Amino acid sequence: MNSFRHRHVSVLGLPALVLLITAAGCSSADGSASAAVPSADAKTTKLCQNLDKVLPAEVDGESRTDPSPASTLTAGWGDSAIILRCGVARPPKMLDPKVAEGRDPDAVAGGVNGVRWLMEKQDDGGYRFTSALRRAYVEVTVEKGRDSSSVLIDLAAAVKKAIPTGIAN
Image: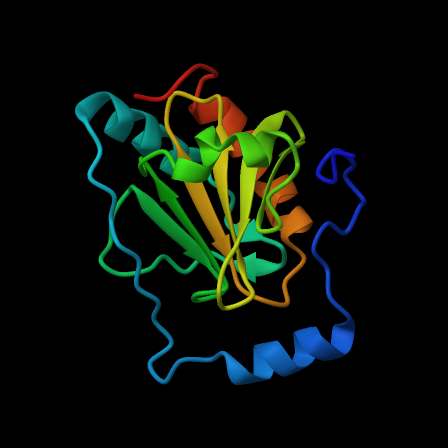
């Protein structure tokens, strides 16, 4: 029932052919990604700065390449393949009873290595994950065609270390 629970489960993996086609068609002309920097209060910003210090240099085989504008509230790996934003607002679906009951076809709650996430399918076929039950909301977007379970596994230790459990403001 909880599709995020096991380390080796390919939660959202797609066939290798789709991954290859997606990777070939997703490079930008200048190679730089952009991400909106969240507007966070001072406490949340401090937690996010702590997270930035412990984020891995590599996620799902991709090297860290932070988006612009530069900020300790955002990080990226593989150009725009994986984007992390810390200090985002709570997504509305986090309070939607349909999600909690498993009746929403585009959103599901789950956990990976001790970090709870809300998973939302995006219109472009990618996924957005937002941490739950932590003092700051951490959002991770993963482009279409990437095995997002590996991404969440690679980020779990840093999130657990820097963002304490609790309820975000």
